[in-house]
Length: 351
Image 1 (cartoon, rainbow, N blue to C red):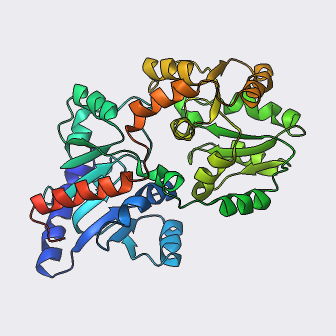
Image 2 (image 1 turned 135 degrees about the horizontal axis):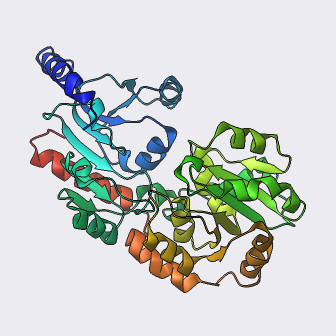
């Protein structure tokens, strides 16, 4: 529990009850602090009753309005609330029916405390193995459904003409192979952006370069990349298309690598030192499913191995996908929505 919640909870709870008496509560809401939350939830939302999106970020509110999605400030009073964050301290009322879900696949970083999951009535995980790891920590409210964010890559939503149009927009040269660089948050101690960014210009003449960054990556890195000719910094909404367009994905400990693995992409990963939230089993997983390197000079030779043999480590990636996702069938959003609706009915919520 966040310390300030002790003071805030009684006030919020009293207003929540008053809002109910006045008919001002929101029946069903989704908390959407960042764009990534919306992208992960969209394949679920299509199977749910109409809901209201809550955000404290004005740019997110404006984006939701442009998309025709009803939205309100985060200071709102829902009867039932879905989120892909551990942020129930912003809605501190035990009477709210609360459902949590992942915004990143599997547990690429150390899980938070079990009590943070158990504050929800239901928490959705990306696989049975992911759920089992949570149960070993003491999580009691979990259910495995898959990873909805990947559904568009498997249900036909993203078409070949769309990918061709996106490549043209990025200025991708069809005569050169394409690399997708991905970086986790540099403040985590698990990012390799400091290794590859200073020398990225060296490879631009030979490769198309796409880059996706964790939303919290330092502004200095982001500015340097935006100024670099021949580099496309991919918007959150286009990350799945970028992965599909890439010949090889390059990363560190970013959970985006799990998504690249799901798409059976060859991966080259930089070894990074142990950090507070790093996990030995993720290092072991990356050793199996990617070519591991320690320095920039090793990058191109490793990438070229995948160009010569795209099936290299494909069997290992398939085994990892069963661990991280169970089934990649484009139906995870439907399973998540079914689990949510079942739980809401169980709690007496009229769907």
